[in-house]
Structure formats: structure tokens, C-alpha cells
Length: 302
Image: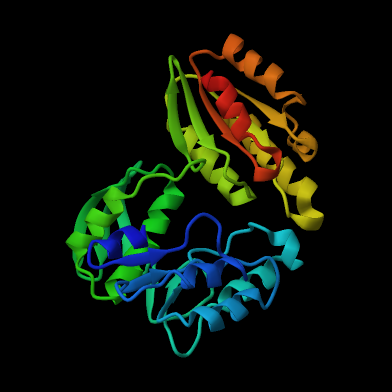
């Protein structure tokens, strides 16, 4: 989103795919040319100290942590270390933007009670408030979490003196990346492809998005990886949410058995079952990349 906004002002370089580690960040920075006025660089980590190292390489003028949710929590040894790791992006030499639902402090905040916030939310439509300015935004992206992402991008753009009309245009031009809540209409079946990756919080966000659709609502939930000692508990919690809110849900992947849904071990059989029994449903398909549920999406489209 931020790259889309900034590219309306001047040539902008941004991270492609998941090139956000000790190899990907330098590779992206090596693409910088004289024409580029902005660079949007994603810093990722799966252990303490990694983001601090990447920050020293990238030397950001503006730094933001979008959230402190539990993706890869198992790699950090607990939530406290996860938060500490994300906080490594903030430095005394950068302007720091913080989410109001985190414990960080900075130069500008976004979220409830922050300098930049959203209200009058109706699915992907909302009013964007930037200090004393307001404008209505219609995102092409699904999910409440993408409104939060839009606020983070808006905060970064604002601190770089981008006007609110340009921010709106950049947000509204942003389209979903492959495997991130893509809507695929396959005859009477509607597929929500969210197979790029999965964590407990992104599972909750995806299920919440599914619940906004009419008609029969089902899900195929795959294994969530890198959750450490709480893996079973996290799967059980998401499984209970699915039981309480969906018409039916299916599972795929060894650890996905902990969800407590109807388990399949063969994607061909699962695809055939969905097409035979839920031909007019909306089906959410989501799991960590390791279980390759994108192959189920492909099967349902044949």
C-alpha cells in the first residue's frame, strides 16, 4: 500500500515477495537507482537480533511496526521476545510510527485513539482520519486487518508530507497479492484464496472475512507452522472458532488434525468432496505455505 502511495509522487522501489531477510533486504537495496526517491523495505525475522541487523543495513528514515501478532512466535521463544524483536526496527535516527495497540512509543501513531484512525467502517469502506483531515476510502482489499495496514501506510505517507488525496488514491489502487484473500468466482462456488501463509491472528482475520459473505460458509484450514510449544493449543483455539461460526470446516496437514474438523489427507478427494457437496458455498482456503493449499485452489478451478 505504501509503495503504491509513494509511487504516485516519485519513482519508488519496494520489497518483492518475501525478500525480507538477511539475503533479500540487501538484494532489494542493490536495485536502487538514481531515479528512485523512495524505497519501501520490509524487514522480517524469526529470531532476536535479526531486525536490528537489517535496520543497520537499510538505515530507514521512517520505521513502522504494523502489529505484534503471533506469526512465527515459536521461533522467538515466546510473545515477549517477538515484541522485542519487532521493536528493533526503531532507532534514534528514524522517525518512528507506532500502532496504538502495541507498547511502543514514537513520533506518530495509528489505530484507535491514534493520530491516524478509521471510523464509519463498513467492510472495506471507511473514513480515514489524519489529524484534522478526513476522507472516505474504498479498499479493493478484504479484511479488517487490511484497514489497519492502510492506516500504517497512511501514517508513513503523512510523515513524508504526502497529501491525503494522494494517500486515498494509492490505497484504493492497491490490489490483493496472490494468495492473500483473493476472491475467485468459479461458477456458483466462491473461493477465498488465502493460502500465502497462516498464523493464529491471520486465521481469525480470514474467518471474520468469510463471515461477511452470504450463503453457506465453509473453510479448509491447513497447518499453522512455527508456533512452538503452543502449537496444539493455537490449533484447538482456531478450531473452536471455526466450529462456532462456520457451517462446516475441513482440515489438511498433520498438525491441522488438532483443529478438530473433518480431516482429509488427499487434495483430490477433498476437492471432489467440496465440488459435490458445497457447489454453491463460499469456501475459505488457508494454511501455511508448507502444506501447499494453493494446489487445492487450482483443483477447484479445473
